[in-house]
Amino acid sequence: MSDDASVGTLPAGLPVADPAPHQDPTTDRSAAVVAAALDSIVTIDEAGRVVEFNPASEVLFGWTREEAMGRELGDLFIPAEYADAHRAGIARFITTGEGPVLNQRLELPAVRRDGTALVVELITVPMGHEGRREFTGFIRDITELRRTQELLRRSQARYEAIVRHSTKALILCTPDDTDSTFLAGEGLLGLAPGTPLPGGFSSIVHPDDADAARRLLSEVAAGTRDPRDGVDLRLRRPDGTHLLCDVVGEDLTDLPEVAALLIRADDVTRDRQRERRLADATAQMRTLIDNLGSAVLLEDDTRHVLVANDVLVDLFRIPLSADELVGTDCSESAHRIKSLFSDPEGFVAAVDQRVELGIPIIGEQLSLVDGSTLERDYLPIDSAGRHAGHLWVYRDITQHIAERQMLTDQNRSLAELAALKNEF
Image (cartoon, rainbow, N blue to C red; front, side):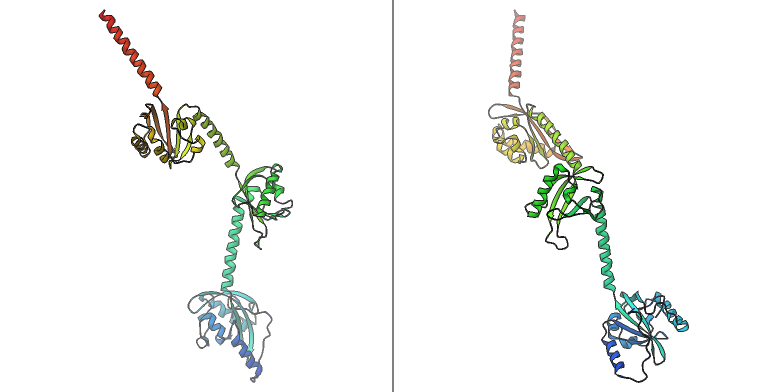
């Protein structure tokens, strides 16, 4: 075998043996051991040709003993790019007695008869036989072992990358919160993965939120809190600042490899700020709508109520409050109130047409069965280039029409008087 690249390994220090010239029971026993060995055992002579090829070698490399005998290893399982180095190593040992790779455990590439690539572990031992030097290689297939190790290495690398770049903080703690470890989320809370929290999870919670944190842990440990049901807690960073986080927990004490509560924390500072701004804007809009004096209905793109006011409820005699209307189906509501209109089916058809066409209509007049007249405005709502909903505004203009008619009648009377005066 070669000192640059070759095959196999067994424990170092095996003696160089010169067998007795006469066959004895020990020789028979050695032959039986070689034949029964689970590892491949291959012996070559000084010329590099195979003189022993046990059954395990046949299984490993796909060659029969008869096919292997007398052939060079380069023709059997040493890859072509290593064959010359293998021959040079044998020649160097024969000439100088130096073999740096002999009696050493090596990991080398090999190839099966069908071309399948292998990774083998090899120990090459020099031996004497009938006055000749031979080299015996003890070979073990470690292809699957190395493949498994590589998969584990990649899995570990992925896990470490996920931990390193996690946008959520992960913390393991005992149910009584006496022992906690920070797992992931360095970018969030500024703690390195694996950092112990001597005071438990509660040690990084703002004092004003401590009771809420203890309640969370207690409910998670008792199994009374859904793992998706979070609570807002302010968590302290190493620089003393606090981050508002949505914190959830899951009981993993039944898993031996975890045996703790898993706490997840997600930064919601900006979300809560946006929610507050939206709530303020919604309150302002609601105040404006409630004081318009007109009936207002805002639908989403699925025609469900987003906003309604009390004027709308009163105008159409709806047996729900404005708040209770939110989320109801506007199409069904249109059918329920159509009997109030002089042309019920025409009212429903006109609503469907406005929604389908999405064309703004201002000042459309509608007659009710009680003689009242409504004026309706319709505006389609678009947001970020997409259709987002519908806005309807209704006004009772019955009184305005009567006043206009009265004014018209008065003007007509005045005109008639003026004409009569001229006649006089």
